[in-house]
Amino acid sequence: MALGGIRKRVTLERVWLFLRMSVCGSVFEAERCLAFWKKLWYDKNEEECVEGSVDGVIRIAVVDDEKDQIFQLKKIIQSFFHEKGKSIMVSCFTQGEELLTQSTDFDMIFLDIQMEGIDGIETARLIRQKNKKVALIYVSNYSEQMAASFAVHPFSFLEKPIQNSKIREVLAEYLQYYGTEEKNYISFPMHHGNVVIEPQKILYFEYEGNRKVKLVSTETVYHIIGSMSELENQLQQYHFIMPHKSFLVNVACINSFYNDIILSNGMKIPIAKNRRKQVHEKISDYLHHHLQK
Image 1 (spheres, rainbow, N blue to C red):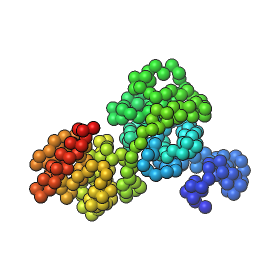
Image 2 (image 1 turned 180 degrees about the vertical axis):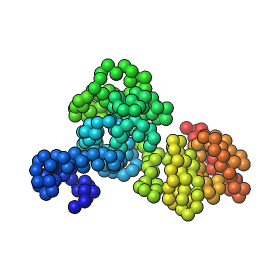
Image 3 (image 1 turned 90 degrees about the vertical axis):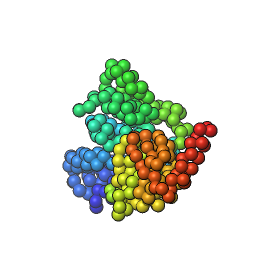
Image 4 (image 1 turned 30 degrees about the horizontal axis):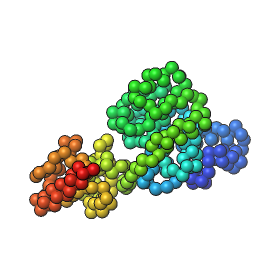
């Protein structure tokens, strides 16, 4: 039986029992097998969705160079939000660099301070440059580092060894402060999985041919699969316009427009002559509507 099939249906503890009874033949060998599979589990660094749809999901990152700590913390987080009926996505990282090179688009980040490479405080400082709203929760053996951590306005500070009750208190406080905020996420297919992103963080789409589309966000660039007409239909409610057959633009990210559109990142998007009047009207309607708020 492949581990992938087991992993979807049972916990690691049941895998341990399975290995002991069916494969390894002894407790010692089972523990060695389990250690190997746990390492494989973490090294996949997979992002897991727990119940519910993409809309309204709480995106959480756990960053710690101790993989057992990651497993323990992730298990508590999943249990808590399952009880609350909340949808979450948990991404795990063993270094600050791993997180920073992938994405900082999270609602909550549990961050170890003492790590190899970039430490937790410097990682948090770099995160804050891109994401001002994320709730940063430091996890550390050293309470004296609490003062240094305040520079990036953390949401909370947890001392190791982590305690179930303390983590649940922090998660409950998070829901108290942020739980009423509804976030919308939208998913686009890629060759390997999907990209899940908030629509307001998308600057524009550019068609590259053969159902290949470049998605440019405020943080990074993705290459997704689809047609421009499919994307236009998918994004109707999010104020996107198509000034040219090869571009789909987020109106909220437009700095100026006339013969071309200038986006907030300085990118110039052409406006086709036969679409100019319609594009100008849509942008003007959007601005008028939002200025009235």
